[in-house]
Image (cartoon, rainbow, N blue to C red; front, top):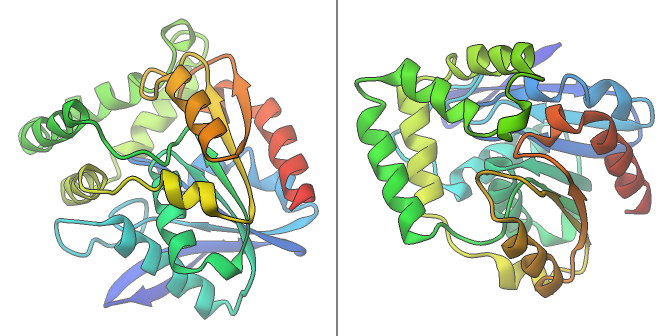
Length: 261
C-alpha cells in the first residue's frame, strides 16, 4: 500500500513493508517504485523494505525544474526520519544509485550497505551532458516519442523481443512522469559530481552490479571503478535493466548482499 509524506510542500509517495533489516529501494530515471514489483515480495520475507517514488516520478510531486542529487537525497532522508528508521541498506538503480551516493555522503554512519545497480559513482562525460541538454529541449515537443525511445535504449538489443511485454509496461509507467519531472531529473544528473573517491573511502559494505552489455554504462569502465573503489562487483550478461533482464539472479545477489551487511 502506498503512503504519502509531505516534503517542502510536495507530496512524496512511499511504501513500507515487512520486518527485519531495513532495505531502501531507490528507482531510476523515468521509473517509479513499481519497478521493484518482482524484487520486493522476495525481500520482505526477511527484511523491512521501503520503496519511494522520487520527486517528479510516480505519484510524487516536483520541486522546481532542477532536482539535484542532494535534493532527491533530502527527500529520502525526510521519509526515513518520518518512519524513525536509523540504519539501512540502500539499493539504487541507475539514477537511484547517484542519489544513494549523495544520501550516503549526508548520512555515512546510518548506512549498513550500498548497492549500485546498473549505476556508477562517476559523473557525466561532456558528451553525456550534451545529450541530456538536447533531450530536455526535445522532450518539450516530443515527450511520448522521447520517453519510448529512452526506455527501449536501456535494454540490450537481443532482449527487445524477449521482453516485449515487460518493455511496454515500463514505457507506460515512464509516460506517467511529467515533462517537468523529466527535465528536473535530467538537469540534476547532468550537474552531479564524481563520487568515486567518497565511495572508495566508505567503510560500509558496497557492491556494484554491472550489465556486460549495458548500452548506457561502459562495462570495462565499471570494472575499473569497482576495483578502484574497493567494491564487490557482480556481472550479469545483459543490459541496463537487470531487474527485468536478470531478475532471478538479481534477487539472489541482493539477498546475499543484505545478509552480509
